[in-house]
Length: 188
Image (cartoon, rainbow, N blue to C red; front, side, top):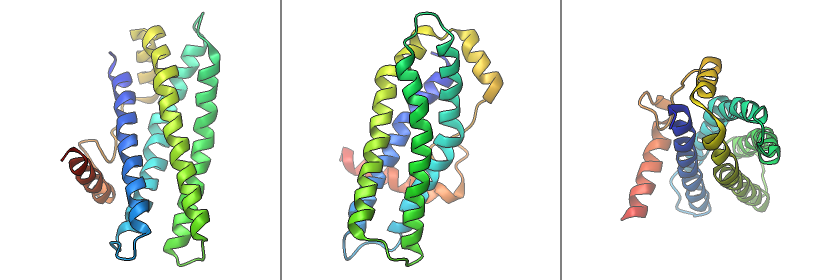
């Protein structure tokens, strides 16, 4: 398995952990006795989803999808769907960030609207990951050869994940701790 493909698979697991943590944070936000840092953690999690998946993960998938589309016998529908979802999810992430920044800045945001939009957002992100895991990643595994991965590498290079990578940026330290703690609590 190529290291870029392995990273794409790991990215999905990492993003899913952030989505799970985001869901827990949203539930905590409804409590009267919530931790004051909850809103900051939500904003940091959304920032991570905007930065890493949109700046590295999805561009790598888009390049691999271009290569896949040129391969004979590859069904284009799931590939084209994934690329369109990348554009839509980037817009939805921006909208979510705007909503939560509005809350952080004490702007009036209707609670039902906020939580309804957040639930839809989480569902869309999870649906996208599931679709790619079941429809696009198997195509990558089946059709992409080592020279295709070298082409991807030459175009984009390797990049580290700011939350889960070894060179974690300070601004995501709190999100990483929250994800780690929520994963530990789930196992226990």
